[in-house]
Image (cartoon, rainbow, N blue to C red; front, side):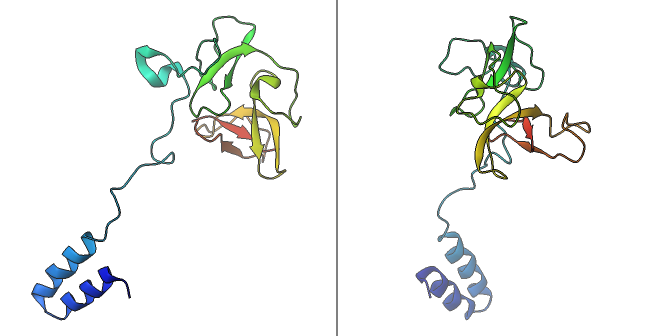
Length: 158
């Protein structure tokens, strides 16, 4: 039995005083405070999420953008997630990889797509970006929209 639990058990034997001892013993065993994670605090993924500072830009020189709106200063560009930087986006010209094409970077994919690890295939593939919070996600019928890790946008599972 751990030292924390032993102290709690011994305190229980003392009645009302024991209840207070249990509470004190168990609270003294806490490792650290509660930390929110990506499920309770989503990462930003667009200019609208970060106020006047704009979106989180990656290491490339393109402007930040919103993955769901796909609005970039140059109408020939598309919004892509920055690989390896959760929440960061960038406007770049479309790549040549179509849906279900193996990829290494999102910049290899057509506009409106992202390169993500698809658990169902075990491969990184170009997949269509979708809105998991919308009634019409933008995916084909019966195709689920899974969140892209670190973003509020998702991808259609092939």
